Image (cartoon, rainbow, N blue to C red; front, side, top):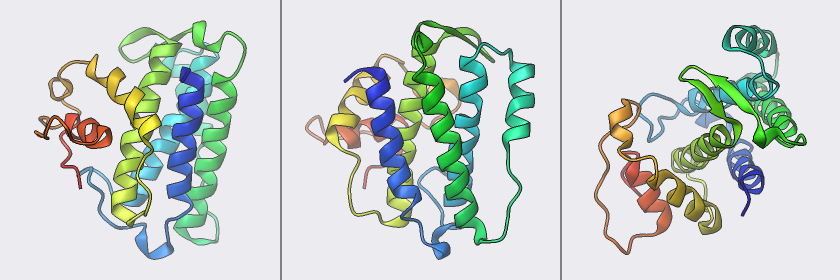
Length: 194
């Protein structure tokens, strides 16, 4: 599956879970120790707000101004209604940016320096898939992340080396060699498969 197709599939899987969250689930803990369900969704919203200005060639300072202007204040309707709507808008704009002609051939300005847009997109796909798993576990979502999505992401992430060395992940969790691909993927991030 091409990167853009993987991105669309990963977005769909995450979106399905966002729209399945009930109002009483937004403050539940997730397998990612840093975030509740609401905070995890906010993290993905923020990440997708950055996509369009970066893909369009803005530097970090200019992109930050765009992201700050795109963040929405809560409106009546509860946390869930606000976050689900904000997710839909941010992720749609991000898909639109990455779908532009030659978008994946561009270079984006990340905090670590100039980065191929294709690499940036692969990192976003990884984040979507792992956090879709987090969200699914937190809200007892009935369907797993599909193998046709987990497989390519797992193969890509294995190339990244020791994720714990980045300081953003815990040490990998050991799983059997014949564990499902999704379990092997989340185990690489220090999460215990369920």
